[in-house]
Amino acid sequence: MSNELKGRKIAILATDGFEQVELTDPKKNVEAAGATTEVLSVKDGSIKGWKFTEWGDTVPVDKQVSKANVDDYDALILPGGQINPDKLRMEKAAVDFVQRFVKTGKPVFERERLSGLADLYASPAEAAGRIYITDRDGTTLVLKAGDKLDVLATNRLGDPIDASPVIVGKQLFLRGEKYLYCIEDGGK
Figure 1 (cartoon, one colour):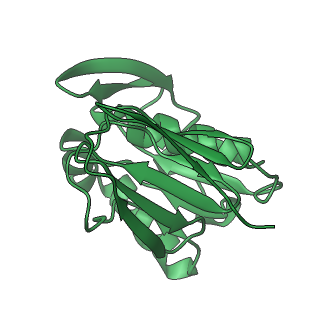
Figure 2: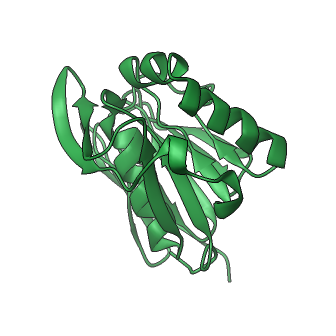
């Protein structure tokens, strides 16, 4: 990834029961793009993720949300799941922080429905300003990397895909149930 987020500080607000990949993957991706992150929560110490059907890993908390200042952050990530959002909605400090942050007009990243995709098992991949997301039915959604949902293309292979896309140079590899697909940028 590039350093397009260099110098940016991003808050990630979560508590016990956050959907693990919805915190760890965005955190890893924005840090790879040069941003620094702070995990905010309603408690000190660490918070425990939820991984599919059981408890997952713990993530250290950098600061209590009640002590965080919205002016210190350039963006806010709100990981989803079923447990995390329900718990945060009941915490005045978390609700107040989100409301104050929204009023600043800065980007807030939260879950948004991706139409055209069904069961997602694979992690997204990013290259050349595009994000590739595949589902189990063999549909690949191509998004423009940015702070707004912008679908560039939807491609259907008709072969179930349970693995994350892999990008090597100008080639995108997709491992289907029957075939290994290689899609290459044919541009000059």
